[in-house]
Image 1: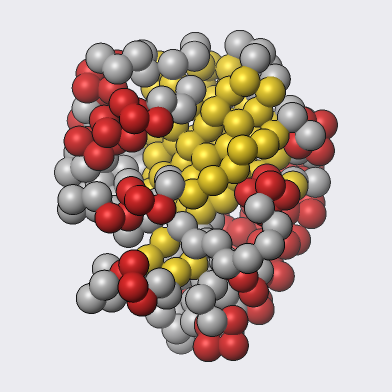
Image 2: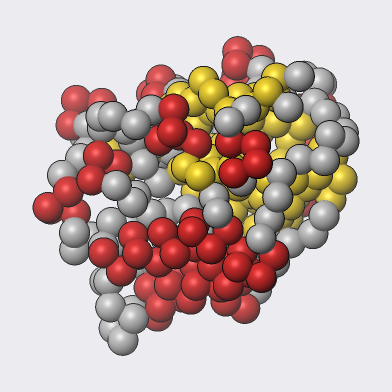
Length: 262
């Protein structure tokens, strides 16, 4: 049965509940993973989403910051979360569908502005977080799993608007790219988006700072869909819903989709 997943950094699920409604109504993914919900779980407007058929939710939240949620038309079992790097943040949650597919929803720390852990604690936290992801994947060797989320790293040259200019900008520095690759390799994960769309510039985030984000098009692919090797051949139809970045009072991220025939 085809199962379509979407991942979206919503930048406040309560502020942008209407945009989530719009996405669910118009695109109707089976599962929507949200990051940066900025809400305690009890205050996520789940009733609004349930009215559209998304009766199931697994989430972790905190007031005003971070937060991850998995909304689903399909029954979900909460299978826990991990506090990578001991930050005490709501940045990971996992759920399992009845067909045995495990979905990991991640919100990796952004890392601040200075790519130097000696000068910037947040950058060190980001590197530590990704390193602990790597170690966990190496120990667990996940199977029949999908990893989605805002990983806050654009790994490939075509994942940023200007590779050379971005080499010293957090999200595309060589140390981050290498760290993410190590985490990916440790779990045997395959980048589904780039499997389906291997050639050309591809972005999922455009800064609020740009006067005209669409015209400037200085984007980065920070949002990812990965799969374990045992199911990656079942994946197809990856896309970024760029139009969502232009909706009224939008998130600075656009949703990323993939479908799995499982």
